[in-house]
Length: 529
Image 1 (tube, helix red, strand yellow):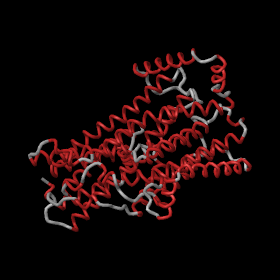
Image 2: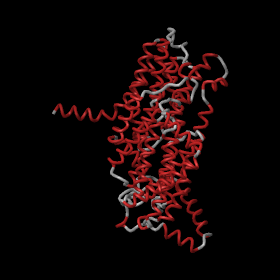
Image 3: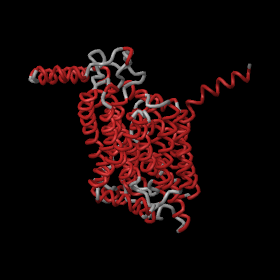
Image 4: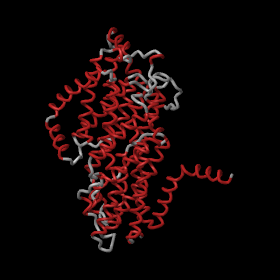
């Protein structure tokens, strides 16, 4: 098998790093674009302005966030039980599968999660290699658990499942209450009410920035402040509320739109947290591969099959230069990627309030049943609600006249609610050390808010619910499919030797180059002419 030759393994490490560049582009096109939907959908600012704010948030998260790998290094499996050759096979499997899977989701315009792709890719590859080791050693299948960090995997799965439901219902509840109070004509409300909501929103976002965005920072002053906030949460919230309320009052003096300020600060916050945590874990696979190579070279014993990766279980810090390079690539991708905009448009179209455009989504029996049962449930509550209260609530949800409708997919009030709820859920999860997907939380809060805002009318409800079901189903199929794909690729690479590696690398390169083939043909025809 090719695993006996260290020069082939070195080539595999180079391939992993080369694939990482393309994979980062694919990842940003799907995952990173999702936190921009509230700002873009509400037209809080121009697209370029939103990108600049997001870029600054990504930069701050890159510079001050965690520089330590966890998920790729030891979060899913125990590296000390794997040899150098097995570790390289495992990491190459993850990069190949990630490109194949995420690229397909981008083509469909369906949002998915980095957390899921990395976790289940590593899990499938680790289980694949673990089964091989169990088979070769002659031990029972019960020893497979030795190689897997089962507690961490279980916490991630439970967190993901729970966050989907919690995010939807919390988003719907908060949006419902907020809309009753502000209505769609929120600009007619007394200004101090918007300053109160703004103070609450930015306090939640500020807390989120400190506990999530900078949770892994090793800078002494930030560590001290973060620890103080963790032990004096109530005092911090009271101080932040008072401070931001005064700031909002000054903002009103200068006629600043409070809701726009909330949305733009929230976008900055999510971008910062995203770069400070998810980026390191995502590029952790190629960095872990390089670290494995360095460990092997430093303690080389002549046999890659027997040199164990004990050193990988210790702390491995990612170079800030590499993180900055990744930041540059992320910003360029956000600004230029057509696939990123396609993924963004999926979420915006599903939550669109104002424009009665033709729905591109199809119907299904399940979606029709959900809408029908929801209608029955809503009718039940309507019949048991006092007439005056029902009329009051109905009046609060009356939509605007055509002349007053926003040019965006929804208004600034809903965008603010999406960012507030997402920040609260992710902050609480971080406090209790539950790893959640930023994509899942933001998307489901947005869907819950759209539902509460009655954006899904009788004409569009079935189609939109059906597409939401497709997205959620795709998330879980991503996890299951990714696991088995990684399991299969790991076995192909291990038993296929050089031929297996050449086959999988060739398929991946073809997938990467496929979008360029029409352009190359067109360029060739121009030369012939």
